[in-house]
Amino acid sequence: MPPTHRALRAVLATAAWAGTLAVLPACSSPDSIGIDDAMTAGQDDAAYKVPAPGVPWQMVLNGDSPADAGAAVYDLDASASAAQMDALRAVNPSVYLVCYLSVGTWEEWRGDAGTFPAEVLGGALTDSPGERYVDVRALDVLGPIWRARLDACAAAGFDAVDPDNIDVYANDSGFTITREDVSDMMIWLANEAHAGWPSARRTRQT
Image (cartoon, rainbow, N blue to C red; front, side):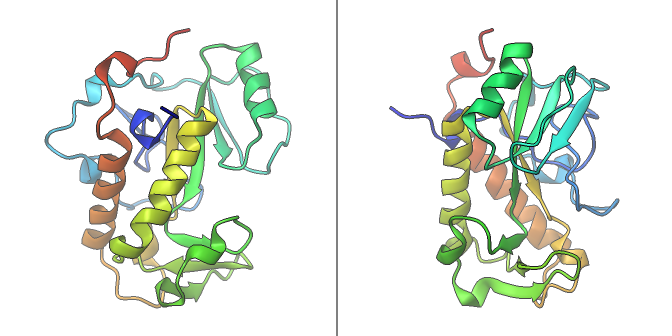
């Protein structure tokens, strides 16, 4: 059976390595929805292997741009090549690779951009041409798209996901989106990424 999002350690939060599962999305406001808002009562976070607080990490979101050596964690764009990931693991076999995804926006340069219906596309981001906010309340429409992205991250061999632009509720999105709506989205993403993952696979063998 090919890898799926159910075999993925999900990083779903907005604080930098400050507890169990956390990462710092590039475009999140200080009061964004955090990990405590996204976890459901039935999840055993202790079962997931995550980086220790304070380890060196780096975001590399420009495709195959060279990464500095020595980081324990790399936040890479979902489009990162297998060669780039293999090169990082060749230097450090236990390196933790995070798959960057924008869940709060639509990006015209993504391969799946054409799968977003017009009704879920909102206002444009003023500082990012070709990017628009999405109606994160529309889980029935966006859920299959996000699920396919989680599948792709897992199949590529990433260890975690970094869902960005989750502060859509605090911006002029074109929709009436609340913090609670974003919390619902984060719970959905957490459940999708964690559901059904066998406990025997909850730490990568290195």
